[in-house]
Amino acid sequence: MPITYNESAHLLRRMGFSGTPDDITKLARKTREGAVDQLLNFDQVDNQDMEDKLSRTFPPKKFTPRDDLQFWWIVRMILTERPFEEKMTLFWHNHFATALEKVDYPQMYVQNQMLRAHSLDRFDSLLLNVARDPAMLVWLDGVTNELGSPNENFARELQELFTMGTHDVVTGDANYSERDVKEIARAFTGWKFKQKHDKRYKYSFFVQSDQHDNTAKTIYGQTANFSGEDVIEVICGRRATARFLVKKLFEFFVYPLGDSNADHATIEKFATVYFSADHSIKSLVRSIFVSDEFFSDRARFGLVKSPAELTVGSIRMLGLKYNPGNLQNGDFGLYETFKRMGFDLLNPFDVSGWRLNLGWLSTATVLQRYNFVTDLLSQREPDKHALGAILSDDQVKSFANLDAAQTVRNILNLLGPLNVGPDAVGMLADYLQTDDDGHRVTWAINDDTIDERVRGLVFLIMCLPEFQMN
Image (tube, rainbow, N blue to C red; front, side, top):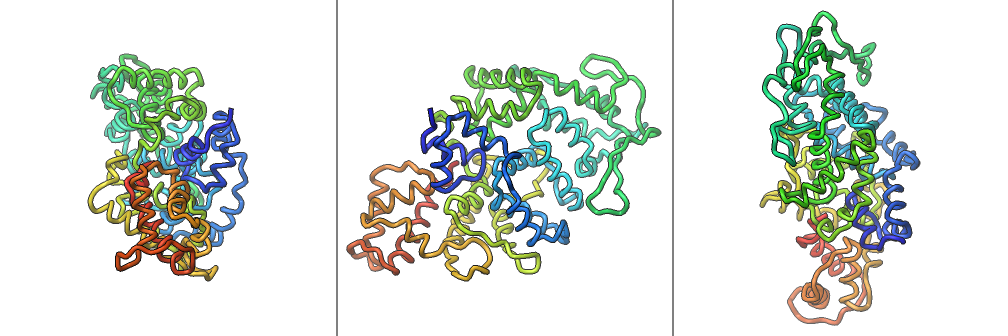
């Protein structure tokens, strides 16, 4: 049985950055499993058009200031034909948070590409790649972790933030001790990287044997000559890790979980999938996206749009053509928009990443959200060489109907579909039928009403609390 239009829109919001009515309709022709698989199997989707446009904007990896790299990723999100690929990369960037404040941008670029390439691997494989990654080795001081003077930063965050948490998210039991931190730090001594042949974006990992602790270590009550690779295998096989990972994924893509028995059962249900699928991230997220929990009323519009979902999603759902420009004359203001909304991409506050959902909202950031909408809807330039996203009057006209209330419903459908009450629809229809002096007028479609009233109506709807939810 095919999914509904509303279910299709929900899926596109969560597994990507929204879509046009045509995108939603096409996906709605599929079953729940078929729709999920279409977005999930992004490696089968041709993305060459995006790559060609990126190569024109960013001549092969010639990033100079670090904001070039941040802008590059935003452009990927807007232009990609594989939205779930970028959404998963975004999830892992927040999960394994590293920052340009400490890490050089070529290393951050390499890490970003690594997260994208391994986003749906076995968790063991992804975690090992992260542990060997130059950006992580610099960020958590792994390069200074040496025999006789172990640095505990990575060993601590590996357990607290990346795999298990300090306490089991279901049972509340402590997951590790201070001794485990110290012993695990010894297992990762001597882990280094080097740059290949003076090539800015080529690095190789190695273990410096004379700096690696090659003696017995006691971890979680077991004693052996554990290597870093051994530690990762042990951690990925723990039930606490499966539960922690499920909770992180579920709360990013579905809805926040509490401490109720029902929510604990949800965690356990998908933790079991993690083990039955041999720790496959792809199998785990597929089981989440096809689940009744994902398609429930609790999930629908149950998350706050991140700055990426708001900005990129607005451009994609309105079907706007986007011209990023080039490194000399590009749309760098969009990166600044992210930053003003509290999302300094590739530069989180600390290793714990960004606070999601209500953490995105404050008096200042909500104002910046409205400012973004103002800027977006003000771009009318018909010149095909104009920078940024352009909403032409012809596009605005396509939203209009001879009936004012239907015009409101058209735009609510375009931007969601958003479910607002009849009173709100009536007030928005009244806006179309009121002039600047507050006098009632007959609604008509003409150049003035298209450019002023309908464009203004889009602004009002995009500023609704309902539009801020995902």
